[in-house]
Image 1 (tube, rainbow, N blue to C red):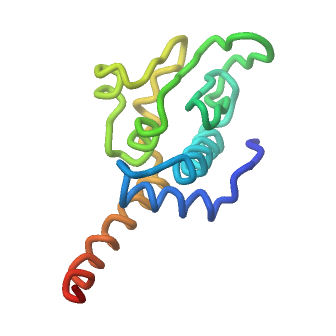
Image 2: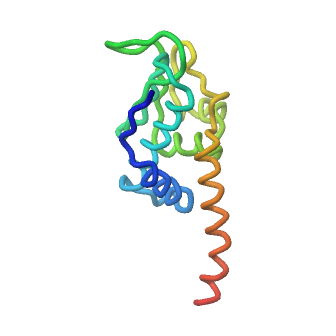
Length: 143
């Protein structure tokens, strides 16, 4: 079981903000969006075989298998916030991220191609972008 540290609504709001302006997202948006999606990943794929790190925001243990308690875990996945959010939302696939060196994965079970994207965050991002696209013509008419 994952201990929630991020308010789910704050996490969804941050993910929505990121979805509509990913290039302009600062720490106030990235931190809760990353933490929220990491927690969702760990809930969806419980375990302790893989440590998933998105510095400087958070790290979780996930994926069933051998659990570690001290030192470097047997499997580690590390990436930056923009790449992680792109992976969980479906904007980027695992193979492309790995080929571009945007994700570092080592150890057994560290390839997360089958686990990503996550359905909830993918839906949140898609909905936010659709809503923003619908709102754009209305904003342009007012100007």
